[in-house]
Amino acid sequence: MSDTLGTDTADGRQSQGTPRAGDAAVSAPPAPPRAAAHRRGRARMRLEIAVLSAPAIITFLAFVIFPVALAAYYGFYRWKGYGDPTDWVGLNNYKLILTDPAFHDVLWHNGLILVLSLVIQGPLAIVLALLLNQRIRGRSTIRVLIFVPYIISEVIVGTGWSLMLQSNGAVNDLLRSIGLGSLETDWIADPDLAIWTLMVIITWKYIGFAVILMLAGLQSIPDELFEAAQIDGASYWQIQRRITLPLLGPTIRIWAFLSIIGSLQLFDLVYIIWGQYVSGTAGTSTMAIYMLAQGRNAGNYGYGSAVAVVMFLISLGVALLYQRFVLRRDLKGAVTEGTV
Amino acid sequence: MSATTATSRMSSTTEPKPSAGRRGNRDRPQKWGSPITYFVALLFVGVCVAPVLFIVLGGFRTNSQITTEPAALPSPWVVGNYLDVLKSTMFWGEFANSLVVAVASTVGIVVLGLMVSFVIARYDFRFKGAMYSLFAAGLMFPMVVAITPLYLVIKDLGLVDNLLGVIIPQIAFGLPVTVIILVPFLRAIPNEIEEAAAIDGMSRLGFFFRMVVPLSLPGVVTVGILGFVGSWNNYILPLYILNSQANYTLPLGVQVFSSQYSTDTAKVLAFTSLAMLPALVFFSVFEKRIVGGLTGAVKG
Image (tube, rainbow over all chains, first blue to last red; front, side, top):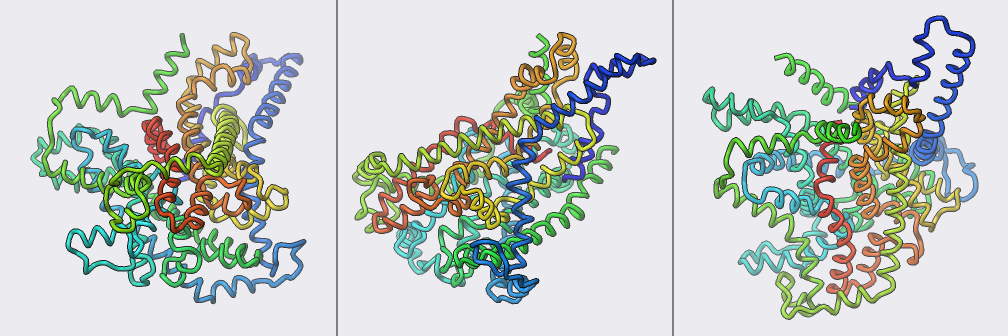
């Protein structure tokens, strides 16, 4: 993604210097005073660039890039967070992480959540978007309402759902009242069920976002294509399969990217509903929870930093692989479809 | 005069959909779709809204109502839980903290983001592409990954348990999205305007303040809303940084309140509903912009 965006910027307005600088360049024999003015113009431009961009770049480097670099440094130490780290342990922290069965568990959970999110939300969002893209009354109201779960904070979603899912909560009560009392169970603590409970909540929280994205993607497909296909006698399903899905491809792939990164970072929901300890026994703990529990809460900042580095590398690796192998196709697709 | 043409041109490039929609509506008269469509749409909306209603309505019930029949409407309706929360200084203290943090973060994100986006969009220099890639790469690293070392940096700066320790990192992490959204926006301002401004003797900075800031307002609003809602809902950063109840923001407050008063379910539900209200109101007022901004950001 950043590749395309980067080139986009680079070949942007090349010809656009300050107007004064341009003047000086055009008047062919540059008289000495003009050249001085030119130089002054360049200097002034440099100053403006520095003044305007420095605050953002310094803040970004200091609070986004620097902490990640710092984690790489602390990760080599056994360190409790007081004074300077002195107890150099080399790669020992990483060895411990990679051989810790608890870390294998959380890694597995993150992977499962990642795959299930894609498999459940993707098709569901596409179907719902196709449905809502028809001309129906109250479409804009529907669009607002399905976006509500996405706009509410994870803490509130977690608090509400954990109250509903208690063994004497609303969900079990509802099941009883519609005669499905036999399904009543402990949705949160049961290790066989907990991950599916989590998937239901995740789907509920994020499906609106996916549907809104897909709807936007659908609306950018020109109507003429559908009309032409209809005239040619294509059936509804043929149109969806041959026109809608391929043209929706870029939107789907970008949604999937956001979903993957989100799955790898999942923290708030699990921490609120299950907490540090129950999430371990119920099988819903994630890497971020492992990092909090083993790092800050246990006072092992060296180890916690090493976990941060592992998470960072996994996210980076997945993001780069995805860009390399999946998002790259968007460029090709755009070119070939553009020429047809 | 040229300013108005610029706005219209910009809005037509950033939001091509409404015109397409209008054309579609003109070609075909509004008609009702199939009943199945409505049924599925209603079901979907119901599933999305029901848990939220559970929280809001639960606040109007008593604990004994909730215990005997967890999934039922309030009967009778009681407002005591909401009044209790609205009368508590704790709620308003946390509300004020959330507001201060959200407003300060939003202002910071918009001001810093607009300045650096202006440079990337409208100046020519060697590191322009690198600068853009730097921020674009930042999109891939949400706060969770950097939170442990970030906490250590904040600690070294002496900003633990200080609202500034939440505000500054939120600005830093808000910048990537801001730059991605604003740069195309600022590039869409026609060169002619800048040239005209230069001929009239306006400096580049004058152009920035008098022309760019007003012309980019729609993009700024989008970025501001994303920043505000993101800050209002942020949990992990306040969890790491803020220790004392006096400094808690609402998400932290909701979590602490719900574990402190775990037996008083009705009051927890009232507290929770009141905590989500501002974000919901904010969202429903600016809904078009949020949705438009998100899709715009994704299309890059």
